[in-house]
Every structure is written in C-alpha cells, then in structure tokens.
Length: 223
Image (cartoon, rainbow, N blue to C red; front, side, top):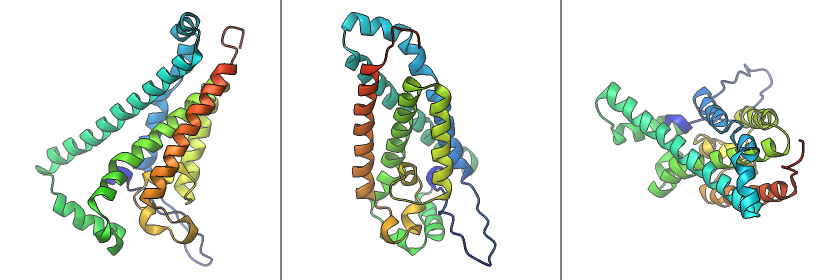
C-alpha cells in the first residue's frame, strides 16, 4: 500500500505553514514507467512497424499491437513493483502481516478506512494504479507519434506534478493515490466505481484518438 499511498492535495491556508511534501515513492514509480515506454513506438514506426503496415496495408493492426504492447509493459512493470515490495518486506521483517498493515492503514487514512470492503481495497491496490499507468503510457505514445518523445515525456511529467499538488476527480493520476479516497470532499471526492468507469473511458478514448492520428500520419514521407 505504501507504493500508492500518495499525498493529500495541497490546501493553502492563510497564516499557517503551507508546506507540501511531494509523494516521491508514488512520483518516481510513474516517472520510471515513463522512461520504460520511452521512444519505442517512434522507433518501431520507422523500423519494423513500417514494414508491418506495408505488408498488412492496415495501420489499425499495427496500432492495436502497440496498445497490446503498452498493456503488457504495464502488467509486467507493476507486477515487478508489487512483487519487489513483498520481497523487501519479507527480507526485512521476516513475514508479511496483513493485520499489522490494516492497523497502520487505519492510523494513516483514518476511521473511514475501516468501512472499505475487500473488493474495493483490491481495486485500489491493483486495478486503478494499473489503469492509470496504461492511460499515461497511451498518452505518451500518442504524443510521441504526433510530435516527439520529448513532448510526450514533458506532458507526462507535468501531469504528475499537477496531480501531486492538485486534487480533482478528473485527473487520472489521482486514482492511483489511496490517500485521495479518504481526504477529498464535495464534488471532488474520489470513488472506486466512478474511477473504474472514468479510467475505462480514458483508455478507450486514447485508443481511438491514437488510431486516428496513426491513420493520418505520413510515416513514409520525411517527418
């Protein structure tokens, strides 16, 4: 849970010490994912991907294969992160106590955490962070195809910075921070069900937008 604990949004209060600590573990987790995606799709487009598009005469097949690659990269990346965390806890403490973890979580997130069901907790820990990673990677791939790898990385980096400080139900990265489900209020309160629907819409929309861009992209001319 520490991987996706995150941080509560920054709230400016007049006359008080308005300090904010960036959730570095969470931030670096998604920043490293950004570098894992890197410039791969642009290199493939002007390499084997071009050969594939010429032979199949369907760019949709190539784009779908890159989307599958994106999902596989995220699955492997987060699986390594989860397993690495469990291995570290086992090596350091000799055991993994779920009961102690729940007690600590109650201290961090408050009494609201007690009412969270097991299914919602698993979605918070496994599904939503993965979906956020897929959205980030798809967006980075689209910007890399349309502009450059630098543009994709800059936009992703700015999204991470904004999401660290600002809380909104419409910022995808907020759903990868468990703290945001217990610290927000009013219209910006996060919920698991809305998050699943909202992030699914993001993924579908990015898939469609990416296909449209790839279909119109002049990959055979001089970029």
